Image (cartoon, rainbow, N blue to C red; front, side):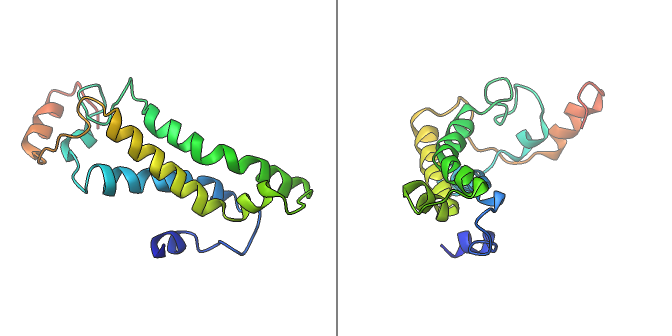
Length: 146
């Protein structure tokens, strides 16, 4: 909770904070790094921009993250639109938007964690140590650009 509040220092200041709509992304990043990967990354794969990388997923697109982001965001949109139009009346959508950062964060975190645990990609859970020598050899011939 302290982490969420420190990242959401604008919470309570403005009802129209578009940053609240970015909260699902925070949940996805926290879920991926702390819950699913347990702080172990394939560092060498971060520097590879093709399908040999564990972070390439399906043609460079992580459908798990997009699904989690969508699930954390869509329930917030009616309250966001009502705030913009000035038609807030205190109904359920308005109350949900009042806690949008926490809602979007938690829903995206749980959905991404669940999808990553039940349908992991082929190279997603393996851990490798960073090998600068291998990285240098990959980029020596100039075929791969940094």
